Image (spheres, rainbow, N blue to C red):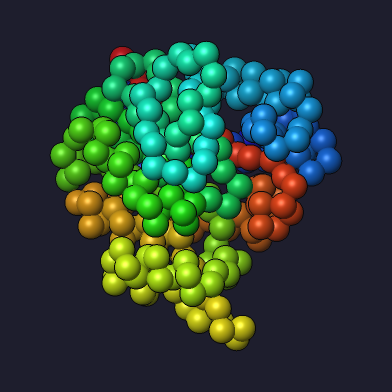
Length: 242
């Protein structure tokens, strides 16, 4: 049901990623879909979220976001409606950050002192627009004090993009060139993990962990929008205790 990040986070930092296993959703959303916006039965999503809260012993309702592949960052807390943002941060104990994904890259952050945490939704559009830099800036910590963990995302072999996507990244940083491999159709296979690592390194975040997942190929564990189009979403959570 969960993947626990393997990273040297402080002992008061808690994090987990859901898989698609362990919920009540059916059809293309089977089983543990956590997204309300994909066409699933809302009652099933409510139950799936309840199961996750209970299993993880979350200290509060997660700050669910209205994700738009942008760069806005909010502080986790109580909102009357999901705020439109693609990352959230928390400096107080008990506030829970979460992002939903099904191919896009979830990135978790914490500082070495365990005083702040963040979760960012980093698909290619967000990466190209600077979501990771905005998240680091919002945390307000020295980049060298941060740890980052890269969660389940689509693998390079399954992620074909056109020239326009590659050009956006090269305009941002020529070092991104190594993340693209030309395929037999004259298009490009893009490596989200490599793109994120380059972005983070340039920001001064050098302790980077995780990666190596394959949402497209691993249909038993992961939802994949590119594989199925109509599908659910996994949740990547982070919070800090006292």
